[in-house]
Length: 355
Ligand SMILES: [Mn+2]
Image (cartoon, rainbow, N blue to C red; front, side, top):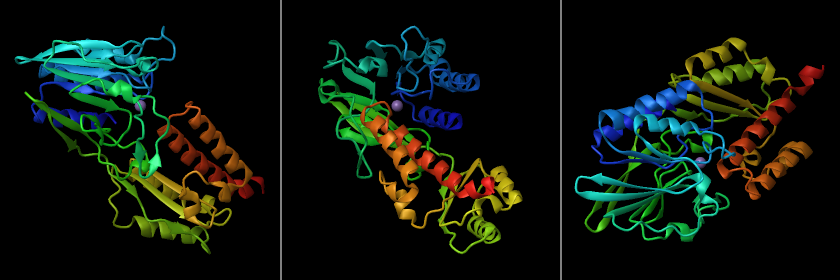
């Protein structure tokens, strides 16, 4: 993740920008690890301290404390001259870029609830709103992403540009409102996504253009699935070898799934091979599933045919919490996927451990 941020900073500096805006979730938690904070400060200082470019950020949901008394790690950003809004109030900053006054309204995640219409402060030449959350009607790959917390009225206040954060893809919500997208992929659901950032240009008439700039990301490989019917552990080991032959695993995040595996086969896969896969790749996720039809497993929201009662119960647990807004759509999706994987693995290993 940090490497990705560093590459984004490289690309930003190459583009000779006047102002950098981060639309939230700099960190994935309220208390990120020290090396994560230091990595962020070092890279960000290249923009602020060294290049002298103003940098503003509105906090996302992941880095917003639940309690108002908790200090957000994002406050460290102030040490390298970043203007950060990470609390529960809206912030307004006026930045001079040459002879242009840019008014930036920062609406952090903590201030979204309870904020109605937002309008630009008067007196600026260019007005930008920065906020973090789900816009109404956001759809990804034909799926509704979940309940919007950014209401239309909040985004229609006559800003020249609305910089949105939260959704990981570069996405046009309105001609003047975009998600810039994330600088790194966060799961196999994003294997097709193109990490990067957005370059936004203004002229006398207001917004001129929005361009997505891709940055080099860690390779993410979703290898062709294995149908493991009739295979014993030795066959499956051989098949895995086959799948990875000629594949560049170095530094990659890799997933290989096998279906229809007989009981006990998963635990018999050659250990040396598994160690080798882990050593060569950044992360190798080998998923062995007992069910016969992969499409059942992949069909969104209907895991019922697969695990029986336990799987059903888990899926409905996630769905309910997602509907209530207790779980973010993105997180819920990954949580569900991971949970199903663990259940499948547990089911396939059970006979071994009880025998
Ligand atoms: Mn978010």
